[in-house]
Amino acid sequence: MQASDESKRSSAWPTAMATFVILALVVSLVSLGAVIHKTKATTVVASATGATVAAPGFDFGADPPDAFQARDPQAPAPSTQTAGTLHKVTLDMVEKQIEIAPGVSQLMWTFNGQVPGPILRGKLGDTFEITVVNKGSIPHSIDLHASKVAPNVTMRLVNPGKSWVYKFTATRSGIFMYHCGAPPVLEHIGMGMYGAIIIDPPNLAPVDHEYVMVQSELYRESDPSQPVDYNKLLAEQWDGIVFNGYVGQYTARPIHVGVNQKIRVWVMNDGPSDLSSFHVIGTIFDTVYKEGAYLLQPSAAQGGGQALDLAPAQGGFVEFTLSVPGKYPFVTHKFADAAKGANGLFIAS
Ligand code: CU
Ligand code: CU
Image (cartoon, rainbow, N blue to C red; front, side):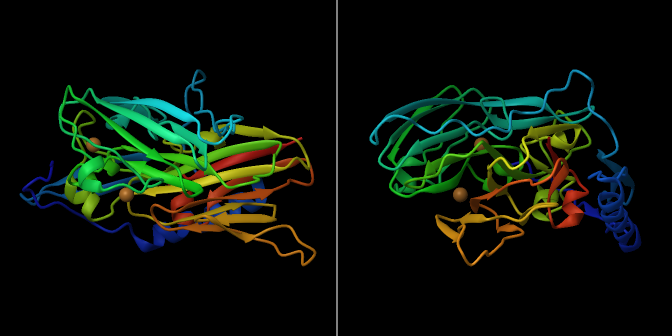
């Protein structure tokens, strides 16, 4: 546990500034088709000694370097094998500095050196044999929400240098969070130890494009080689909100699709603490699937969906088409979060 004895308290972002940023963002979306507002957020925290220090925040106007490659947003292909397949997966628990925004690297705790960890996928009846190998310096663990297991038996703490096999058979479909469950869980998730596993619902229709967006918060520390101040996590003072671990990556590197192609986006809110409201500007969802059930399916009644609302550790998918060529930003419609990095762009042509 990294809780500091220092009592640090952030001053609130001035309301006027926040309002300005949100309004400016909406204006820029409507008039320019751009999704990010160029602004720099800086959190000021007061130390126990009364001195103020600037926590770094993010420069949301910065562009990634030319060589930057966004994380592949494509979902893993559905399993073509019969139900009952054994999936053997190894997840290395690695504590390393990784890039989380243009010009910003920070110590993160990871599965396989990535935040979020790998996206896993299988079918109902499949068995997952997941070997976690702790290559870090402190105990970690894994908790897969897709499983029904005794936590005290299966969600073992794995000490540095040790490994553990977590085995379960998928009995319920959906997209589920997995995360490190080592105490304090808030810190291990806040530091990056989370991912998602898809268990396909029966008869899931084929689509032209299938993507995964894991929403999560990013918390920065003044010294990027150090874990985040635990008090900051407790106070829910995130600096950024992201899809797939990097500030605004799909705005910088848009996702290209065809006009009228069927698109499915799986969305997993890994939190640890914030809400998600996934929305694609300029279209209407014809299918919404949340927490293992369809809320909406194409029908003669012509019902439409506009946002998939997800509390922390909830997931689902939406399906839609983009009917005319153009640029379609996607966001969490909690716009203060969209302005802090949870934004991207589809380009339909
Ligand atoms: Cu951990
Ligand atoms: Cu959990």
